[in-house]
Image 1: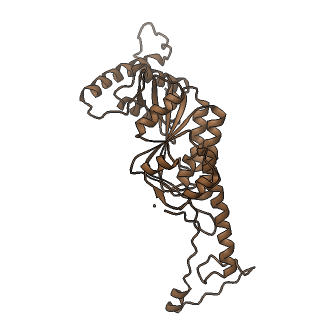
Image 2: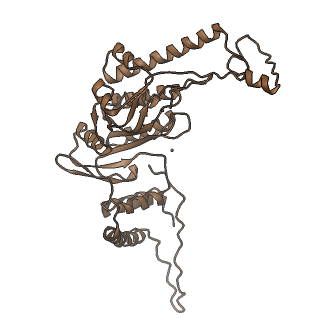
Image 3: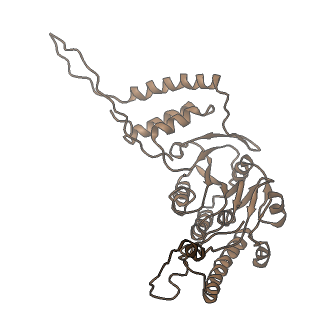
Length: 356
């Protein structure tokens, strides 16, 4: 695989915490009038609502536990176990945060973008319960500059917080996605993962021959001779081709140096692997681009080990959903405790998200 870069942006080739939702409306109870001795209306209390919902949730959890056949992700540590929950705001114990990079690396606001990834890393940095991060990567790459920024954010997070970052590679971890992964403390890959693809490419299409066949004539009026070099209406001049080649080489050198720094390898060693092609996970472990063959569960366990956690939970770090969806996610986890559910509800009430 190679990297595709348009004339405006260079591209690595390819082979989206719960937020406060809408308040839940409540109403004051109706009272019958006392004909002879009117009594003042009792003081409105919120506590009974939390208690009532907690009781209902207990019965729901019991029912879910009896009929559910779907397991939740559970990682076994050397001295304890971890359970999977959702909602970083409601964590009551130490956790490994999981961030998914699934798709093209670009500027779209998702966790596959610099702004989206940094938002989740900032949340993890500020939350005392999140002790480590797992990046679950399934991407063939994308925009070079986005990958460069995201690599810097991962490196800064690990260095500034001391919280380890472990990568779990899915089907593909290539190009810009691999550049980001190279800044982690440890990289897991499947045996059949397509990983690596260190290289840069720029594509300029010349449609002038087609236009001629169609009888289309295009005149470009430009301020300089090369302004229309990427418009596709003419072939590149030799000078323009040399210019773009130098640009690609410069960007690729940045890629190589970033990987070398992140993986603790010599620049020449990485440059020798920068063929633009991917490696299998097996080969990547042998040549140093990855550390170990393993699953996402293995990556979570390794992250916990690096953070010195024997008992922990996992939490998805992702763009915010509603409070209702968060509670439903918590309820769907068969191993979530009633204490965590009640704590989450109390926090929402204290924040004014459960309104009456």
